[in-house]
Length: 130
Image 1 (tube, helix red, strand yellow):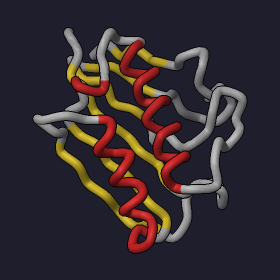
Image 2: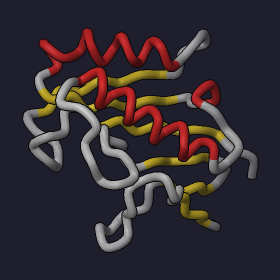
Image 3: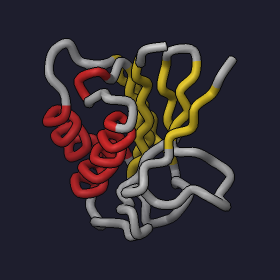
Image 4: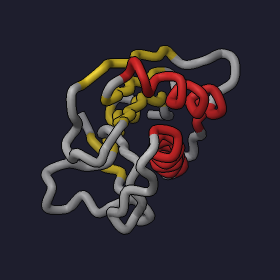
């Protein structure tokens, strides 16, 4: 089974961190969780809306590498710190990203993500041509 790695230049360098931003295999693009960090490794916002918006920009950049858009996403999984208070802000930005038919969507509450400044981490699955 062939695996193609996807690491867009405008996303944080994943080298040395033990992961790729995405891998395409067997007709599907699988991606690592994306956070509210820009290509310079700066967290773009201290609030859930700003971080969610940046995470989706990162997801969009990954999709672009395989000639896909957010409209091609079939599954979204989001991990949110303190979802009871932050889900409304997250969901507002999520709803701006997609139109019918919406992707499958799972939201999980977590105590903390890899860095204490991260409030949300989002991953997506996208079908691509073999």
